[in-house]
Length: 107
Image (cartoon, rainbow, N blue to C red):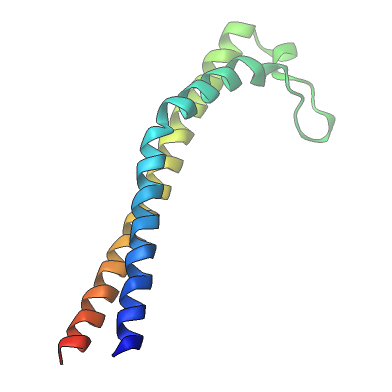
């Protein structure tokens, strides 16, 4: 009996942690956008892998910034969505686990 109550408390704490992580992700969206914008302006100056020349040497700066911004505009939402779905899935699993423990406690 006490063991089930401890399990339920543990699941509750994990659920609150998951919910807090989701809330923090939502609050970090503006910061992520600002970082992507800053990286779009800096990325053309960074050299490529294995000593490749920077993008600025082969492209115009405007084109390189636009290209970088488009790439970051595609990658950031995909990464955010994947992370959010992962946390939501974990939260659903924890809710199910809590429900099963409560059902077992009633019986």
